[in-house]
Length: 312
Image (tube, rainbow, N blue to C red; front, side):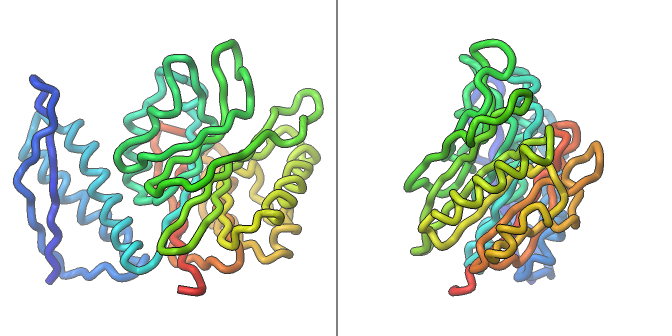
């Protein structure tokens, strides 16, 4: 028998202040020691949340928001105990299509529920009054944004790749890829670096061209040279590749890089294709992977991978 303590808060709608409630302890016969039980754990916690919401009627929106941190927090804690990190990619289409009207709270719930340590996001739009800081929460307090299209339509809007993280960055960077031919969107890569348990990681967030195979292959070739020149041993590349064909990345696979979504998980909902991926250097192995359904929040599902270093 395992006891799970749920610490929950609610927002007083009159004072707009968060109030701590008495912790709720739930018992379970399931010991969550493997990634195979991650979905079961999420289901158990969601059942707890339903009970809490029933008890605290009138506070459902706020309680749901906090409870996603409970779900994600348990996943993150279990991974850290077992020397694992969860990396994810999420093309948040509405971050560019709707800007200030984006369903941001729903996106934050999805991100937190994933339990990821770091997420690479694509199609993130900004304006003077809607900047990338709005994607951070106490669950993901760190962020780094690199623009790729300036402007996406009319000034002062811009668009690009965002990385949000629970782990502090020790270095940030990134730049535009070589100017593309006319009619092809400008692309960029976002690079962040962080240290966890004495190991340094380089994390790349990318979004590859969709207009032509030739344009995409040019960016892939340029990206490969950039990543290969990176002196950090533990490398993670996440993003919307705009192709499901791993054979387009022969340079990477020949160098030992591992593509963790080999047409297993349909991430682009309109076509059902597996175009979103997490790629790791050969010294990182996958323990568990899956998707978080995003509903109407985006036309892409969030894809995640739990990895353990071979040296651990």
